[in-house]
Image 1: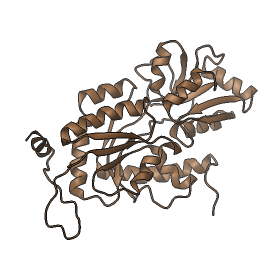
Image 2: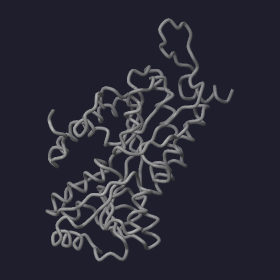
Image 3: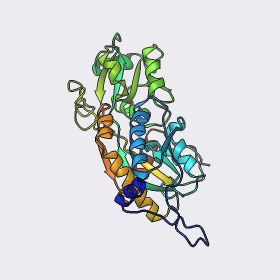
Image 4: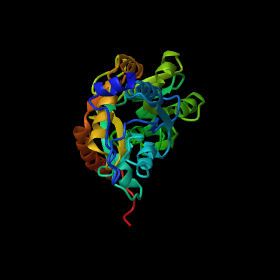
Length: 323
């Protein structure tokens, strides 16, 4: 009875799944839902998405099981959707890297046309950190050292062709410096690397905050439109003379061809789940805010971003060779 009341509150108690010849509606969900996320366990994305999944599961009356699919610049969940049925039981996080994929890798599917966009949820707050004992104690020091030592300044990111990687390359180009990029599989691996002395700097979301609070890392700049509440003394890239704002919005997608009624049911459940206080509190720990877009707006965002990312990839010389 409780499950029926929850589904009724979401505006739909049953969905026809569109099986040819089927004459009856099948109640959804009748089994656990799998939510694929693009980064490893223990990082900001994993922590906040698990809160979201638990909230949505309570609303839908079924467990939403989080499955980590790290690697390939955050694009593995979107790739997995291409082989899943559009029955609502497989959903995936769609990081911004998905819209760069066709420009850097040969794939047989279209990120705009071959994903059903459910809703956008949030974005990241990024920055550059160095070890607290580093001689690079300001952005001025960072740039000066890099100019004096071309290619010797190593920095890590959460993966090849992720937003931290590409934004750092854009920053380096504008600053007139050469950096050496070292990709990792996610925030937790990246933090282990910089704390262990493997790299000189890291570009990441604010999963680095606990290490800054502990006095182990220092933030040189952040990438939002305004300074972050957690680091009010740290300048933004704009304040440092570079007109760059990067929040890398992400949300949830599903396989192509999903029944519109099912899209609405899932959208409504996850929208309620993302607006719950515990999810907002989880996001706030990483200086993240809600960035809501419904299915139509999110699909338009996907198409617009797909075009913009092509220009960025080409400007950085990272496009795949013509076949």
